Length: 517
Image (cartoon, rainbow, N blue to C red; front, top):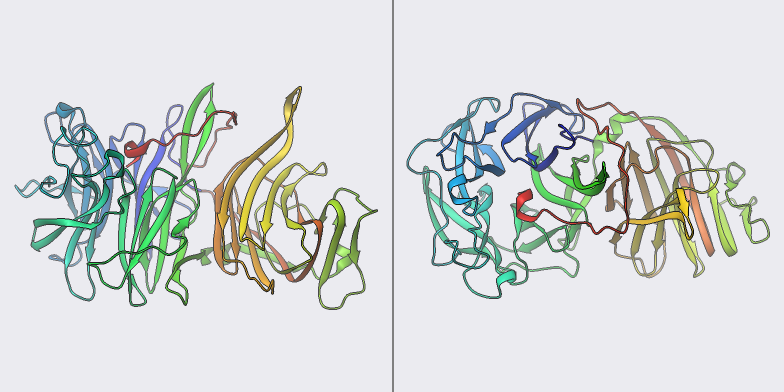
């Protein structure tokens, strides 16, 4: 995990990652001030070292002297070996109500200079977009630039989070587009895509994969990462029945090309209470690998960088190795005679069947089949009293839910326990209930769950750091086979999370909205 800390709390904001000459370069905002764009480097995409900051707000009187928002770094198409950074800037004289896009250049990704030519900053014009503070939400939305150089047509396009001029005020969010018709000359046209539903489509990404075009954007209304697909860039852009790429809490995704792979980086945000004040903390989890399935849907796979961290791999195939957590001996049973896997059952009530040992950072893989109609799931990092994480799986409806569940350290009356849903996600169930493959990764405060190779849940939480691991049933039977456990090394980033947060679950989580861009 990577976070950026200062006095009390200073958080990582929107990110952009470039892979060049064997090194990942992370550029990110630093909240709440938005006064510079930070730069960190990594050899593995997970452990980061801060280097020279890329860009600071402009001097008083300049167009970007208030705040810097989301950026995008790409190779300069006119100057091989050099780089361009499009970034969002705000001006103090306008109270930050007008967003513009500027340009900085670099020959080495470390030293950046603003482009001072008359072409920049870019301003969003009419007639397609809100372009004055008298329209819509009384600010000008033109941020989160994404430069796209089409590998098929050679076309150069600058995408942005903008708003159309007409329609319900909170439904005008769109993906704006300006085409670079000559070096540093951009001509705006109608939006690339207007969902007609959201206040904004933040941090857009455009890419081609396996013969289709994909548009990725983050939606503040549900704090999730969505995507749309089209046969050609001009559209029409369409949804699948489920177009959520990452579940709630994951935001501001950016794609990064590494060889023939596409990685997805994003921040995860969660609520923290520090010294009695509520904060939205943002951290950078490990990346995911972006792929497509046979139906053209985008899917996320676990980062193969975990392979380099794995050690102490062992199989759990002997039924005698499992132990019951709750001691529900009257209703729970482990079949000791089966030769086709491990069979676990609990006919009435709840029982968790634990594998040997205490585990902290690990990757668990297994194949599972639900026998019967009851409930099933996993327990992670649980204590002898059952305090820990509970992963509930509905293999019929295709629903996963991760909870933090344990005793309250300061119980009062009925508040003897802490019970919080951390994240929910959907997956495509198998109506025949044939075998499914599960993978759980816990690495520091990061928890990731994959089903049949697809990431379903991706969470950051510091509630429990170590404990037992196992599978649970309620009025159900489980068959497990090919179960393996391996531990993961944890190489610390330059700055790790050091705060212990006091949670208040009755306080609603808020989203900073455009201020996080």
